[in-house]
Amino acid sequence: MQTVRKIDVDHAVAAFRTLRLKLAQEFPDADEETLSDTTEGISALPELVAQVIRSSLDDKSLASALKARIDEMSLRRTRLLTRADKKRELAADAMRETSLRKILEPDLTLSLRPCPPTVAVTDEQLVPEDYWIAQPAKLNRKDLRERVLSGLAVPGTQVIDQPDTLSVRTK
Image 1 (cartoon, one colour):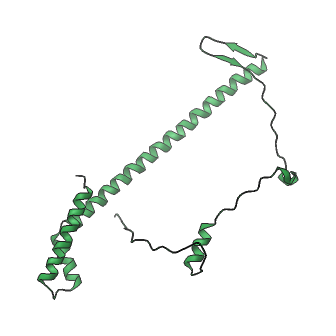
Image 2 (image 1 turned 135 degrees about the vertical axis):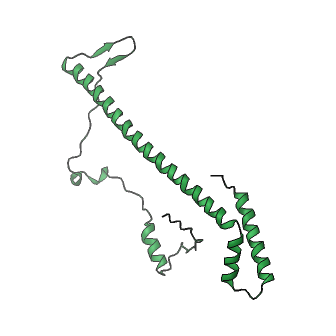
Image 3 (image 1 turned 90 degrees about the vertical axis):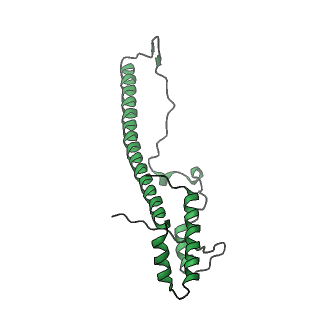
């Protein structure tokens, strides 16, 4: 499929508008539906726009396939990291059980080092308030949107109309 450039679409839009204007001038009694049908029938724009959308759908398919491949590779990466961690823990357990604190090899040095103790929270309700961090307020955008769109005037907000969106359905 040949790539459609923006300039090609811009030219087709300009030609479409010119053609429609000439048809309207040539046939002033023609209604809007007739003008639209005639212009669409003799213009390259509808096929060009469809070609752009087909290309967009191809890009989405490739992106989906790539995502699937990335997900597969991510799972593989996770398995490899888990396996590496288990091997490391196996080596550490063997060294702990035998009190072997250090191993010197030509390509690596292994040593067991003491770790600082950790603190486990067994019941958050019992921890004094001094150890809690207050969280900053966060805007509830979903609730705000619903209320403003329902007609409530909220200072600091405004409703912004959006352009039409293109709906594409494939069979």
